Image (tube, rainbow, N blue to C red; front, side, top):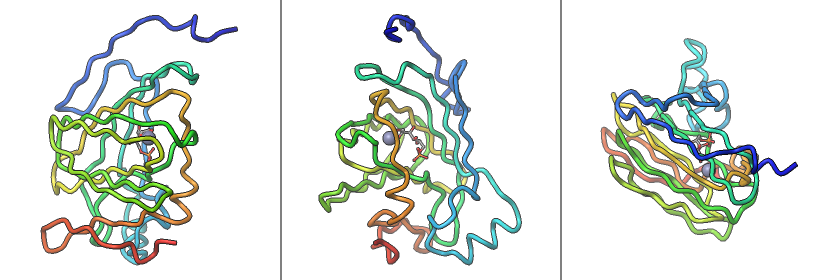
Length: 194
Ligand code: S6P
Ligand code: ZN
């Protein structure tokens, strides 16, 4: 059966201030323990984890059939904090269908999107309220919250059949890291990049 027939037009409400959408279908909560190996300062990572498996980020989604032509959307909230000198960040991923793009709209906070493609190019774009970021197909993406106290809140939409390739980033990391250099975010080469 064509699942497209099951879906009808719908709306949802965005609560910018509290980082919520109305009636989400999923609520993904990513804790520190799920980021093992992703932070360059392993000592700080382990010390933090020993104290508490804190929440780094959350994602709310409105689900649609995961088929070509549909668009999946939701809200991503990266909480403030650091592991060593690196800010709280998402795992980051390529889309499984590599040539699928994504649109982000920043509604709250201050952060960066770190991106790279398999051709060797990289980019880091600032995220502040009302900035729209277009992530072209082929570009892996990771959002980073550089604010010490406030959540980084973004709305995203992408092709519903895109899928997520987390393994590539888990294995080799991103080429660039964003670290706190005495209160100023600094983009540096990732010493652990393979
Ligand atoms: C999905 C889109 C976002 C991220 C979210 C969490 O394609 O890019 O919804 O899923 O920002 O990041 P990650 O890397 O853990 O999926
Ligand atoms: Zn994505």
